[in-house]
Image (cartoon, rainbow, N blue to C red):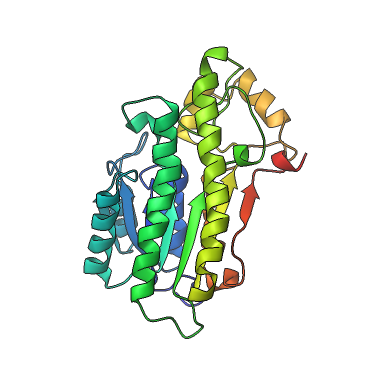
Length: 276
C-alpha cells in the first residue's frame, strides 16, 4: 500500500495484548510497520486471538515477546529479539502493562510498572537507535510513551489498573496517589528524554489518554454503560468516551515523519476533559 507513514519501520509496542496497546499495533500495521508485540502474556482480557496472530492473519508481520517492563534484563532481551528478527528498531511505544498483572497493589508497584518501565524502555531503545545509521532525513528513532490525563489534573477514585472511574472511595486513595504520581513522572521524564536526545535524530513524546472504551473501563463501571458511565461522559466536553483507535492514531502521528520536529510534548487525547 502506497503512502503508508510507517512503511517497513520496526516498532515495539508494550502492553500490546489488549485495549489501547492492541489498537496501536493494528494502526501501526495499517501504516506499514513491522511489529513486536510485547506483554506479560500474548492473550489479553476479552480477546480470542493474540495480537501478533491477529496482525499476521491480516497479512502483517508481527511477533510476540514476553516482557516485564520493570526489569532491565527483560528490556535488553526484548530489543535483542527485535534486532535478531528484523535487523533494527525504529519505534518504541511504551503502553503500560496493567497493574493487575503484578503481585503488589502499592505505590511502588505503580512506579515500577509505569515510571521505571518507561525509563528502561526509553534508555535501551535509545542505545539501539544510536547503533543504527540515521535515515536520509537524519532521524534515528521515535519514542512514544503513555502518560494519562491525571498527569495534568488530580482525580479521586481512580482504579488501580487503568484510566478508569469509580465513585470516590477513601480506601482507593493510596492506589490513586501512586497511579497519578507514576503518570506524572512519565510526562516529566519524557520531556527530559526529548532534550537529552534532541540532537541525535531521536524524538520523544507522550500521549495522555482520557476515558476510553476498553474492557478495563467496562469492568470499572460495572460491566455496562450504566448511570456511573453517564456521569463520566457528562464531565467530558465532547460528551462521549474515547476509543483505543483515537489514541492509536495519535501514536501513529508521533511515530511518523510528520512529527519529526515535534518532541517533548504530552498530547492530550481526552475529549477536552483537561482543557476545562
